[in-house]
Image (tube, rainbow, N blue to C red; front, top):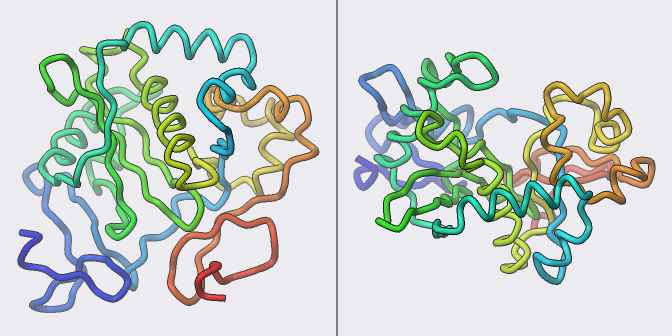
Amino acid sequence: MIEKEKLNQHGYIISVKNKLPLFQDFYEHIIVMHLHIDLCLKPNTHDTPFLISTKYNNMKEYIQSLSKSSKKNYIFCKKHNNNLEYCEIPIDLDLIKKFITIWSKQLIRGRRNSKLADRGILLEWRSLKCFVAKNKKKEIIVLHLVEKQENFYDCHMPMFDKTKYNKNYLAKYMWFSLINHSINTNDIDFIDIGGGYRQNWKNIVQNRKKYEFKLGYKFMYLPKIIKENPDLEKEYKIIRCTKCGIKILTHLNENLCHKCK
């Protein structure tokens, strides 16, 4: 149980008994929730961000920056989910277990996520935040895990039962809701929805057609001006602060976060 463990200096859970990495066993020893790995830091799942800026006065201003098709997607998913309540909740490992189990059994882009079923999700405990959507019965029907880094959210995919809610566009609803939340709280500068390993952020927007197959749907959340002027973007990459280990979003040649400088 978590209460039998303690956080190390970086904020990650470690085993008090043997100081070995703690693996919270999930789903009958098949799905494993990794909460601590490799000197208290999980390996980067990607070093190229896909960035959604949160530097807007309000959600309306952000929506106005989108293309016509993106605006239609926003209106459509909002209309079909107007009965849902979006909120942040405390971390609940049993709940996370439930949604990992559901998500691992489903077809995602035509195939099951066997890696998820075998190894689970790597999470950074100190920065973990959990957002959900509840229906009128207060039942949680979708769960979204994000990790708050220095000035951005490092995001996992929203998880839900696609067989029940495939026509509700819940993933779009959760992404737009997270953007809205981030604009209103003014807590971060960007949401990173994952760009893989592709040089840098500028390279992605400059080569949209090249990356259309895997990243195409993500461009829906980008303002029209960025899609039309990719050469104006900065060469953002994700690195680790060499002192405290937090992820840094930077286009400069630096290796320390602002707090450690």
